Length: 187
Image (cartoon, rainbow, N blue to C red; front, side, top):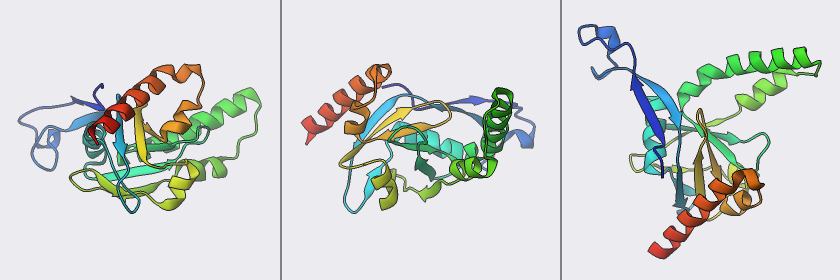
């Protein structure tokens, strides 16, 4: 398993209070999500954000807030921290410019609603959170979550849904199969 999140120091000057966060530590620029993990489902719609991803989301959100939404093309969920909210308007601008350049239709309001339609979920120190039922249904989430790093976001999969993806997902499918097998062996 790779690291789920990497952080790098930026603009750190020990004598400059502006270079420190709220706890007097160096401000850190969030560098993305990577790696894979699997977490079995708990009871009553509870899931656990795996430790590597939990740490990265905490860094990205400056707290314990997980943002989740349905992926627009794949049958999975997309997760990220609050820092990604700042990127969404720029993403809209890029998508609109591309559509204009290619002569394609672009409905900015619809796309904005899609990008900003995520739910903000609190999680505890152990990473436990309650996933809304509508999200579980949208992505066919069941007995566990396979989590795949994707840079600015990560995806959360029902392993059966991931198995239906094409050959370009071979590495993720192999990692998922191994992690699910390891989790089953520990029961």
